[in-house]
Image (cartoon, rainbow, N blue to C red; front, side, top):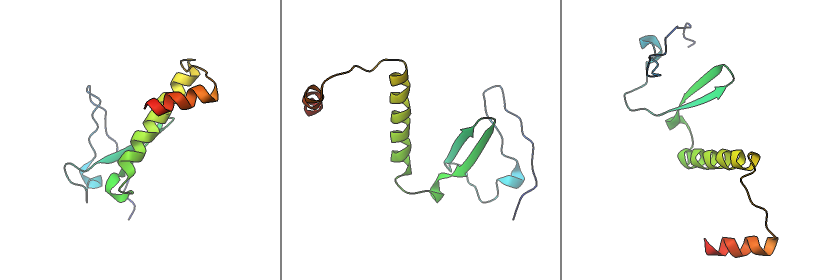
Length: 90
């Protein structure tokens, strides 16, 4: 069943209230995935996702953080053998 559109407001603290009509089937403590795409935010309950989802999110965040560091020139270049030596230290 498609719900009618609802309007809500972002509080001073950045909190958003989900209107009562749209909270049916949700409970306090449910985890929600938020995906921002330009001016849109998509919300999805995480218990509908793969059980490894939290690990996948952590990996995606580390990857995004690493990419930002790369773009800022914060990575150092090294030869393959030196790289393998560094990895063995981990």
